[in-house]
Length: 320
Length: 320
Image 1 (spheres, rainbow over the protein chains, first blue to last red):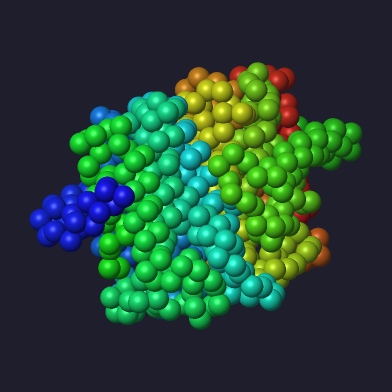
Image 2: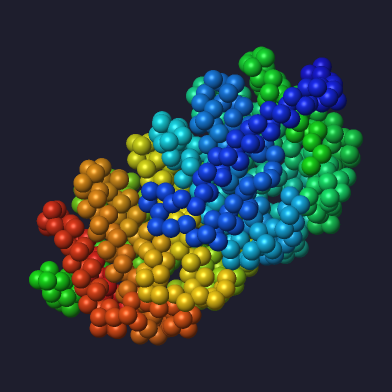
């Protein structure tokens, strides 16, 4: 557990955390610029026109917020492997679009019915429900368009692999399936009692699959060997689990103001999380254990894996 | 105009029309089998589980209905070029999934608020709105998953081209953008008066782009040269326009029972269509002219293009 203790020490020390925050912010800025460019008024080849209302609502849903953790993971994994940072940035930005589209749809009245997201009105409040449905639809489409675009990735096999991976992580057997299980957990489709293991499964689908794919996308862009890809997948899966437990802890502890969205919803929905099984201290210890798994998974890369190690520590230490 | 007269003759004669109907039905059966297999309960590699409710609602939205015109165009274009029919069937089925997802979302209360589709309750009526949103989302994802799957298409460059083409045809500057313009045409986002040319533009985006891409997908799978692809694109664009005018005529003339959905909505919404500019007879003549454009575009393929010529005639002669 030495590595875990080391991780705690570095999260507590201000200097390394600040340096990490700067790295995260630099990728977030690059993602912002990339997506702002893709959502500019100019039509692209094959387009007739870009309806201003739709384009503006897409920009509202995507720009000006978020830690951009998913693109960061893709960029840093590719960077560690010596792969194309521009390619990883495009892939990571596509993943971020899928994340954003899922937030727009999940916030809708028929789903989680949230009025606030990142501290500002959700898309269906700022615009209307029809626009919000279409914004989510078009953001998903744009994600796949970016992944298939030769401008960012000359190797067609890599492009097709990225499309396949994002589709698997985000569809019926991944993110969307997890959101349906989450609605079911509220008793929406009939009485239900969700045990901790059921919750872990739905979380692995709803948020874990995309986080793990973010790392995998960096591995694909970076030309990882099968063995390296498996190691990075281990890292990604553990990171996804740690992220979710940290979320469960925040949901129990943080204020809606700090989170920029409603909290305490899991308890309200009667959904048992790992916090219920292990208590807050036990959940924190499990987070630490998972950070250790992440660190072990990337140990072969030595010092070059330091940013991914920091990302794992950041994931459990974040306050929102 | 000899070719147009010939097309009328063959549509009126029963035997060729029946032969064509059989070809259409054969592809529809193949699409049905392909999609039923992709939406079976068995999880695929990388999936944790397939939530039964979501999978069943996706099957409800997709299986057991529709002429499958889009896959038919993809399959027949590829067949004419001597390309892989299995590859074209997979690509066409993916396009059909995008078409189906758009119907599920467009039918929702916040959008067109339709209770009936193909004569049965729409997904949000048969299930609920949250499930309908997620069904649409996951159907779109599945479309891109199929296109990126090496099982149907060994050439990664073709896979990436198909993904890019479908994304461009169906997103912000295509189908989804067209649907937003269509909602705007109803005055949903403020007072508006839509001229015939505006309507033509929104129709070209909402339905034309995907129909044209269906033919293009067959061209991509069939390894068409740039010149052949351009000719097939001309065919696809003219077919899309003819399809839409035929729809406008049906909307004005047909009963809701025959169409399996509400009719007379364009007039109700105050949206001027080509029928308003040209009258019913003029609109029919324009359909015939466009069928002629289709026939000219594929003339280089001689007898091998006969099914695509029949498809153009069928598009304007259909009764639902």
